[in-house]
Image (cartoon, rainbow, N blue to C red; front, side, top):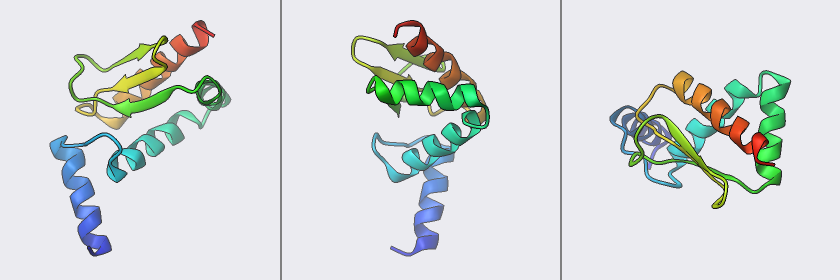
Length: 102
């Protein structure tokens, strides 16, 4: 598959919201959102804590609202149907819950 086709498929999935767990486009999107939050030291610190506590962050189009955190299962689920900026704010909120439960 050509690089252009992969890029177009990625964009199509992003805008049609057909992301599957573990999808390459999903991972790129999460990385971009992480970069948004990592601009400030606190964001970078929260990601470090989530990694240290072995939290898995992923998109889940089945959830209602913007996102959810499950401390027992060490999961942060984000709804991919929202804009990246909104998801970034939601992820910051969920990461704060991780910090609260450490």
